[in-house]
Image (cartoon, rainbow, N blue to C red):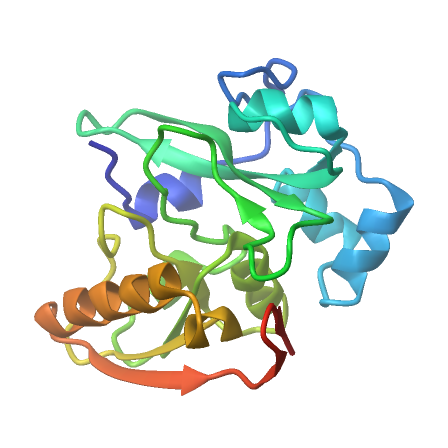
Length: 219
């Protein structure tokens, strides 16, 4: 089972790793295409922040290898810090943000057969995670968490193993999930599970709703 702790995330620094493979290792030369740089810049994510977060562009073949599935789209590979019960850990690809998907499908594709990991932007300080007076926003994709963090809003994407070991009791936590929750049962159920988990940890949970343009697209 994966575990997530604040100290693991803060101590994780960008580093050279093997080239991307089906084992989802982080690229040794993270590079982003001009289109991906523009996409991230439109969301307030600078090239420096992209580099520190180890985001890099992948073509359809690389994306297919990382995801263990055949895809026909370019995408942005996103690395997460994965730690085990022994306290050791490493960074590996937790999702590929695909440029093109079928209507209603999530852009953030996860490696097949592996649990959805928690994503904590390293730009958010350990003091913020540990301060119960600091509000946290819970989203459902790493790119959304990174974009909010770039704007000075502490955000995270909570994975399948539940909330990470930050101070939750008495903390205000706002769930801000994709507009797909209106018609996607998986997204809606995940939101309910996360809300129950946080309530059980003593958090003050609020749910915000994003407006939608149409079925299959969120504003």
